[in-house]
Amino acid sequence: MHLLQTDKLTRAYGGVLAVNEVDFSAQEGLITGLIGPNGAGKTTLFNNMTGLDVPSSGKVYFKGKDITGYPSHKIARLGIARTFQNIRLFKEMSVIENIMIGRHFMTGKDPHKGRFLNMLNSYFSMKEEEELMLENAHNWLNFFDMGNLANEDAKNLPYGRQRELEIARALASNPKILFLDEPAAGMNPQETEHLMDTIRKIRDTDVTVVLIEHDMKLVMSICDNITVLNYGQKIAQGTPHEIKKNPLVIEAYLGKEE
Image 1: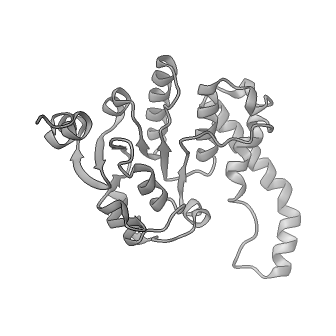
Image 2 (image 1 turned 90 degrees about the vertical axis):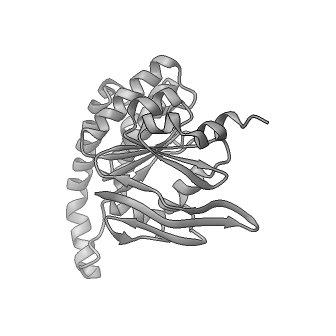
């Protein structure tokens, strides 16, 4: 079953087609890779699927529902979370506080209740919500073997741990699908190996994973399916074995002989 898919998604900036009629899909329970040379349109496609940008044309569907043009906070509430190329932690806050922030937007008033009832509900439930948020944060800390770092300032973590903390914060919202934008960027080989194991563990918790990554060893090792973009267009889709042998993919990365 396709958990998330696009139909001829296009994003133009003036006369430049960053993404051109791309059909993309992520199957539930699998790890899907999105690869391509620099400037291929990968992050633009991510942004249009996660509400940080709006397609010029085409559609985005999540669980069969049209979510095209939804703002990012509404998309997050549906069960879609993401990380970014550049780490965006609250560096002066503790590790546990960073993860709790990832859950914070899920709390608050019930839109089906009146203003007064919401006020009362907020007053009496705030403590309970904070306790649940803290419990949720500790669960994800333990998942990443970072329980002993709960009170450490985020800025003091090693680079690889900061990357993991950002992923943990995204997972704190209990998403159905997690988008990772170059999660291995800047990591050494040992950190990358650990990240690969972590992504598999995340998939095993019934979270569908979609990732952009330039580390081909990582992509070919953990992805079930891969989509390849070049100059904003989809040029290939298939298993790692199929992608490795695809002549259009080879040409996109290595060029074509004269």
